[in-house]
Image (tube, rainbow, N blue to C red):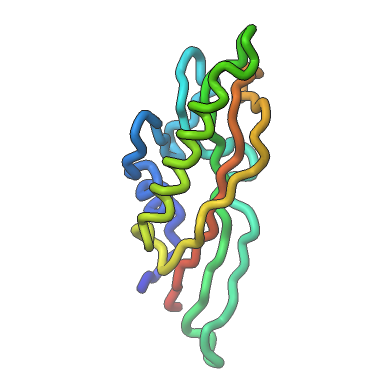
Length: 147
């Protein structure tokens, strides 16, 4: 049970996930440029927390369910001359990301988290405009608040 909504405890738990060959960043580690990095999962700088809803659990409204979605972006590698040379490695890493989120039944700070959802695999840009193979990764979170 929690006396406050704590987004950062959940994001810290995500950043602590062990995903072979993938660097997972926390909310305070969003880089303006991925640079030459590859296989990086980090919070979306825009629309990181979406779908926030607050619903009473009981008639007295002394307990609330807080539901929201955390949105991440996976940057596999910069798009180069051979457009699809790294495509199979991208698919392999996405499978590892799904497995890591699915293996952790409850992220610390959350009462429950849903299965991860992948957006379409496409070119994505870091905040500086560099283009990478990648996709969006979203996870629904439920926190419980006693007031």
